[in-house]
Image 1 (cartoon, helix red, strand yellow):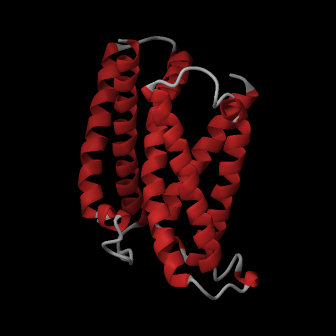
Image 2: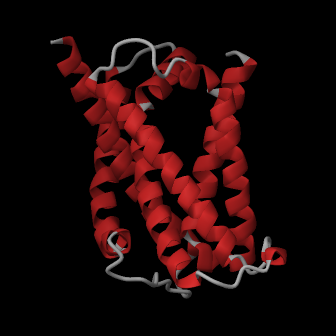
Length: 223
């Protein structure tokens, strides 16, 4: 595997881990949340630099339904990232407190919640769209195909997605996405790993949805 591809994978893994940590901001502390938020923004820039060829070829080639979905998700992720950073700067009490911004906090709080939860879903769908490529890399590393392993992975994906539906409802994520609740509830007696497990499952749910949606659109484009 080429060094650039290894770097891409490392950046993407780091962004995924950081994103999950950010979702539990009250559990990791506000100061840590702010610094980690800055870190994911840096990783986001690095991700686009490493994938500059994709941006350069944006207006070339045929626009299939799958490609339109890919580009739409990239734009939505970009908008959610910008929304998170702008609102985060306004709300900052630690990392960027020297800026002395004291107005617009109510608006920024709502924008931050919308950007964070919608961004979480968009990034998970984006990951699912590219999951085929990840599986392709894994197949090259394993080399020896196995029907049993394939069905075990499919069953695991189904279980994760099924639990992800439960976690999505139980954690009231939909209400945060629609601003029906403007304050996120955190159970501070709950183990952090259980919290992470639920959000990993929700991410898995939308990753699986993105993967199968991309397969469907890919088939429609070839028929």
